[in-house]
Image (cartoon, rainbow, N blue to C red; front, side, top):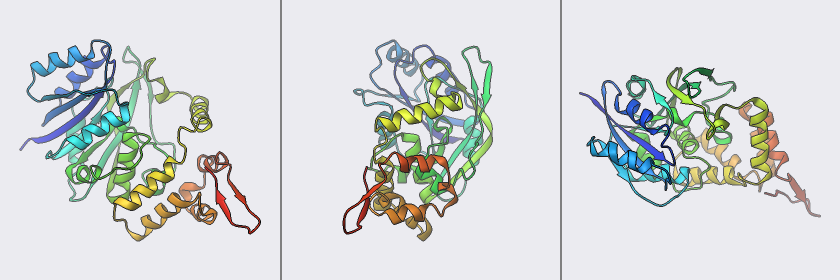
Length: 304
């Protein structure tokens, strides 16, 4: 029996690349694709192109709505889709290999919430390879690591219905839809990593932050912290995970420490016992929080 995959795509001013991506999604082998597309208020010809494709393909479903930003646009699709065996995120400017979904769903056969992710090959507009990305971080795919940094490429994500049901329960804050998905999958299920790429990740002027140099990454991170883009949200996400999901004892303890370390300084030092937090990334998080202050009674607390 052909496996059915519900592909979730949010578009915004993507007229230059959207046709190539749609063709690569619709030409997947050995799976039946149901493509749900939410346009997030495009001002170019993207909507016209989408309607053209939908008119000629009964498996394309268009969702109209106002501009929400890419995070909420994608999460709206998560909330509004159901009853498929598998689901996948899709960006508007990549190119999928024909076996992308077949390989992914073949890795998601266990009877538990599961998320598949893979390596990506970055290319320019001429399809020349720029970089074959890998994971430079020790400890990646662990739950403590998932709480602190979004290191997985969301454009590769494919997951089963067991995880989709759990994703629909989430109502907490978000920084990115794919990071939320990664955290939840790590908290209550299993994440599978494929070291082989089945996607061409296109780098162009509108998304170049994806594979910039090391210095560029540091500069981008510094800018976001300085301007409070992440203000307290990591801890708030951890608290939402605690409130919504049933975790095992180990993950419950880690999540509690992460959710409340700003109020309880001792929890920060407990976190430092986990190898995933023994890195400059997490120490930088502490430094940018004005750390803590103590009053005359020595009651200390973290100040966001």
